[in-house]
Image (cartoon, rainbow, N blue to C red; front, side, top):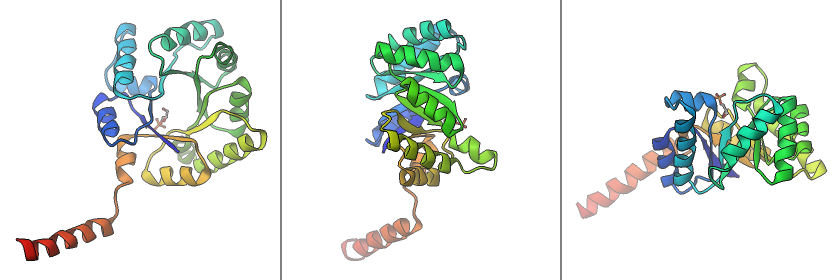
Length: 218
Ligand code: G3P
């Protein structure tokens, strides 16, 4: 399972990359706004800055919603760096654009996916990745991880090549459950990645090992 970080914060990306376990980055317009990145030139430069930190796919989301505008915007994003993956919303024009990008060899991440039905459309259109938002599904009193299981099952039945990228991860248990469900990728905030380290018995055990060492060695 690949680990992506879901942020536009360069320090968080650097910290996750320094662990040696980071495979890629996802961003979205809300995450870019959170970092105060505004204006087309700055936004494009920020994507390049991210690509220069992580050697792996970097999802850059289009803000257009009409087919030809999505295609033009996506081409501009894809031209920024070979690692850019064009993130396209799950709407009719988005699916048409994903098919166009697939035919042109441009990688895509179909975002804002909340059902298996939508995931089937994304795979049929040739999306490189599909992003079901599991945290937001949990927020609406459904089990987001169950959707990951369902999509993985369907994709396996038909040999769809689209990778299942579990998004809207809110905690470390989401990561573990997505791993059990067979997600290809999880994209997480830094806090959820760091949360994977935590176990009180590790802390207690390490403290005891070091205390015993110090007893004899000072
Ligand atoms: O990048 C898309 C997704 O991960 C958003 O997560 O926490 O805003 O639901 P969240």
